[in-house]
Image: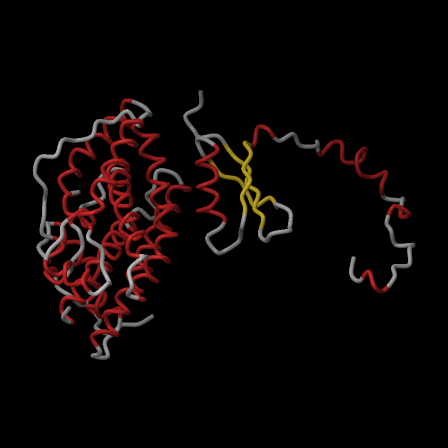
Length: 251
Length: 94
């Protein structure tokens, strides 16, 4: 495992939280009910906290005297390694919840496995994050059930969201040479091995929510290697605005 | 049927051994959602180890008009406080 491979691995871990946290924080003040507004904002903060921990580790590994903020705010689009699903615009509440569900069902399985690796930082991080993600997963599952088995309107909206999002779920299970090098040194998980457990769980929940599991056709790819959707540049422009305009600003 | 979610009263126990205390109220569609919402609204800063929720309509409250009838008679019954006993020192704080 080279230092570059480790850095990409850490970015793959940190950037899902960083980018999805940025997306979810846009719901602050716009949630469908005060209680849900707070729930999603809490989730956003959980993700940002997780990203902070991992980016601190990136800075330590790198040893150039930079900190987690430099890594969060001063990279260009191609240097982010998040899954594409995390950067998609929020859409309506059904879309946001459908994404939360599909992502957290995978992320939970991923962290459960990561908590058993030999690398101390990775295992420790996973054990800590898992507590938060278990709740995100439960919260999103409950909402998928309510919306799917709710009114015609809620059913239609969440079904449409699932149909769009499905093409982005293939990326959860990708495994390339970098992943392999990290697995070999005991600090990573072969995500491909999680696919059957994820499908089984998602299928069961969607069926009990009276929703149709979309058919596997083709899957979007690229985020984990730094190739992003058209939405990423806009997201970064907003997220990085302050650090780009006032370099080194602190508060 | 009302379009709004019903109101729930939330009780939080802050530490093992203490009683649940009323923390406030919130809206939720069912009991499970009420617990999740209570977790998000009232325990963000480590306030709790246990949550009770009860739909507000199930709480019967005493009427403010009955205040005199219910509570005033206790005013002059100081002997109901256990302040006339000598507590042995080994009992400690009671």
